[in-house]
Image 1: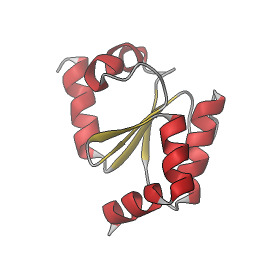
Image 2 (image 1 turned 90 degrees about the vertical axis):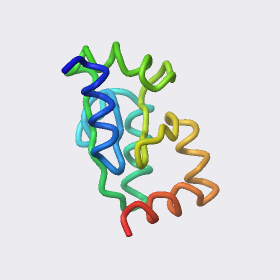
Image 3 (image 1 turned 60 degrees about the horizontal axis):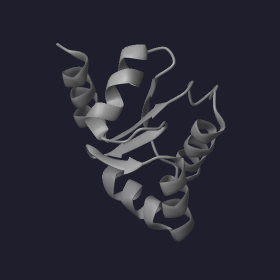
Length: 104
């Protein structure tokens, strides 16, 4: 399986997935840390891929998602966006509603 197919499979198999630098326990960039904190505040169960440990994913994902930066958050197979968009959605309450609808 090529890397793009593998990424698409990961995205489709995980209800909430973040491609990030580092792990939720040890984020390795401020944007990833902020995004993970927001997901935790929303009390969401989510999966993650550390792109620093998975260079193939780091290189290929922007082609798959058509989004150039990290982190990237996917919900129900759809790209929600990166740190700024997730933060805006969180502030408006839209993110919590979306994430709650996934888990119910």
